[in-house]
Image 1 (cartoon, rainbow, N blue to C red):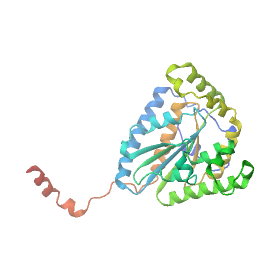
Image 2: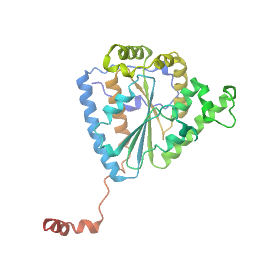
Image 3: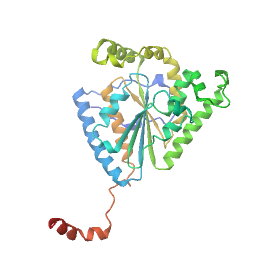
Image 4: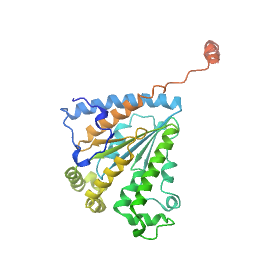
Length: 292
C-alpha cells in the first residue's frame, strides 16, 4: 500500500475543496486496508487504556461530512476495539426544546469528554455555521434578543459565531482536551450512488429519507460554507483534516492513523507510577493474599 502521511490531510493553509481529492489511489485491496486498520485499532485501544490511567488529557474527535459520507461506519470500525468505558459517541441532531433554552454551544459543552476518555461528535458544533447558514430560518428557534427575522442575520452574525467557536476550542484545548476535526470529503457522484443503494438494497432502506434529496439540492452552498468554516477554524490546537471519503475503508484507516500519530506527540501520557511505599510492600501484600 502507498504510504499515508497525516500531514498531507492537515489544513495549514487556505484550501479550495474542489481542488482536493475525494478518492486516493493507494494500490491496495480491501483485505490490505482492513489489515492496516486492524493494527492501528489495536494500538489505539492499548493507548486509550494508558490515557485512562494517566487521567490528565481528554480527546475530542469531531466528524463532519455531507449525508452518506460514512461517519457512522467510521465510528463503528475505528473505535470498536476501545474499552467501552473509555469512549462516548454523541450524535447531534436538531436541537430539542431544552437545548434551545441555552446558547448553541451549551449542548456541546456538556458532552465534552472526561479526563482519560475519548468523545466523538458525530456532527458537531459546526452545524451552527453550516446547516443554519443554508437554512437561516433555523436561527429564529434560538430566540436571540437581536434576531427578529432572517433579515437580522447579517454577515457579522456569522463572523461572531466563528470567533465563538474558535474561542470554545481554544479554551478546552488549554484545559487538557486534545481536539482533532475531520471533514469526510465526498464527491457528489458518490453521494448519489450511496443514496441509490439505500433505495435499492432492502437492508439499507431504513437509512433513506426524502430530506436527503432536499439537502442534496444545496450541495454547492454546503461546500462553500464548509470551505469557509474549515479555513477560518483550522488551528494548531484544533486542526482540521480533509479526508478523501469516496473509499470508506481507506477513509477509516487514514483517520485512525492520524489519531494514532497525533497522540504519539503527547509523550507524557504514561501509566502512573505506584507509590514507593506500596511497591516496597509488594511481598507483604502477596503473602497476605496467599494466606487469606
